[in-house]
Length: 243
Image (tube, rainbow, N blue to C red; front, side):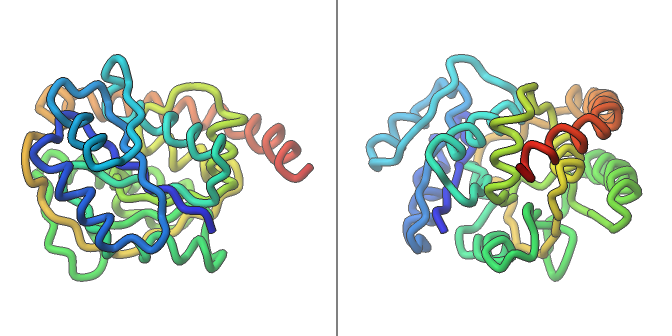
């Protein structure tokens, strides 16, 4: 299968080289593209010097605006799988097979790499952990099976999901909860698997205190919007996809 690794980067000049090196050292034929979310440091220059393709935003599109960029890029270039991979050093290339193989084996259409399954020692802050717990309960009640790490940025999507977010759903993607719900309503089977992650190597998380306070409010609105679109998606998209 044709696999794309989409590295999300915003001012990651201190970690992006090691991330690209890690991917190259464990590469088994995957293509790499860096989604540069309007960095104002040397992130883009370092990637280009390493001969890695870069797609740059002219303005910062917030934490999840990069999703549409790599979905559209993967769709237009005929990729079967696209994997989101953070440019801050939290994700490990040797873990990629855990989120890719279930798609290759047709066990799922979307695979979430979870920090809260298996023997992972990753521990987010209390405020973030609380937010994850709340939205985990909401999404699990919709899916009818448990999803623990709803904010994980280590995710793989198959061609069906890529097509949905590129050719059908034209609106912006605001957060991971919205992505999971829309994907599920489009008929995708979502699987969560244990992966090992590290703490970020450099820089700071975009989840500052103001974002932590605003995140639940925006999250509830996004979930409400998804629930309103549920019937429309199942009716229109399923007809289009099945045809």
